[in-house]
Length: 176
Figure 1 (cartoon, rainbow, N blue to C red):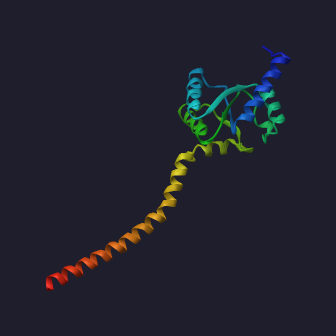
Figure 2: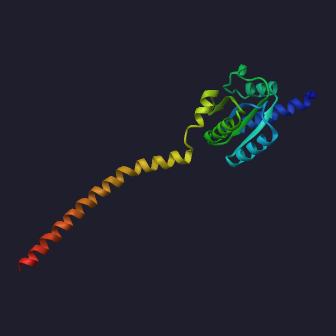
Figure 3: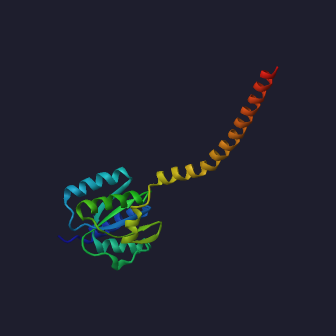
């Protein structure tokens, strides 16, 4: 069923708002995916502060143009779903990769993160990057390692010196 001009304008407004309020999005092929998988995906995406919606391609392309998005417009046709994310792009990419491994569905078409165009290969590379929390904990551990080594060196020297003094005092006590 064809949409009226008013419905199309409302849809365009919604798409532009979604683009504006997200830090990025991933376009995926949604033609072969079943309702149960979509429902599970939407639930998982909510847990990582993301959302999924199927879009009308022509209206979405207009929304992209009017929002000055760095997207190559010829990149997508056919049934298209869009995953909008607010913070970490790796979490939605990991969900896409998981579904793709299990069922060979939900192929990424392209994406945008921080106004940078992502090819389908780069979207899948995002899935291999550890999450933000893991990266931050690795950074803290790396920054902490020199301090820990320094403290061990200082306390080791003090400990050795204390043992030496203790040995000398015991030796003097045994001599007297």
